[in-house]
Length: 291
Image (cartoon, rainbow, N blue to C red; front, side, top):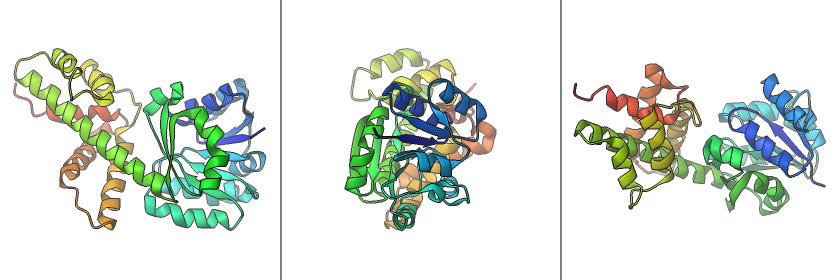
């Protein structure tokens, strides 16, 4: 039987790891958050003292950490994953990272007979709990096939996009569309309110036409209900926005429309809203609404 490991049990990692356990797959975990580890152990997982021990006990290890520097630390620290690496191990980097960083990290892993897949996800905490995430995978096809049973335990749509880094490019495209749509929904609801029309009713009307989307449904509701409990933190979307712009710049591409959206997320973080859900982007617009 395939053995799984998980490093990083935050808002997304915790429910993703729980999904693996529902398939009766042996799971070894570690995280900086003791309570999250305890919850997984109570559900049937085995606790490891560090990432190296997770790697030694697993065939496929999922890593859900916020940024590329965190991923590098999880791999390279003295008790990191590569210290416990073994031939045939597959490491799935499931956070959103800079695409250009993936091939060098994959090459470093390959020197130890270990494969690194970039496998970022979309669907938020709701999708993580339901096992309905979209998972975009870059890396070797053979490693993808070895990891597929673990990825399919967490995702409804699991796509091998291409070589190392391709999964992160796909996630950058995803975050571009999501971020721009959040901004558009925020402006639409603010316009409705400013024009004297009930924004909730406008949202219901839009949901039946071409403007319908998951963002209008989920984040539009958050905006109306003022529920900014984070499913996806604004600070992380601001980080992702810079990954998008950096990736575009490396490709010689200008993204003028999304640049304005990225600036909005930066301003939200600067205003103290970094720990709020990214739907809180609407609060920037409300500051400029007429009395």
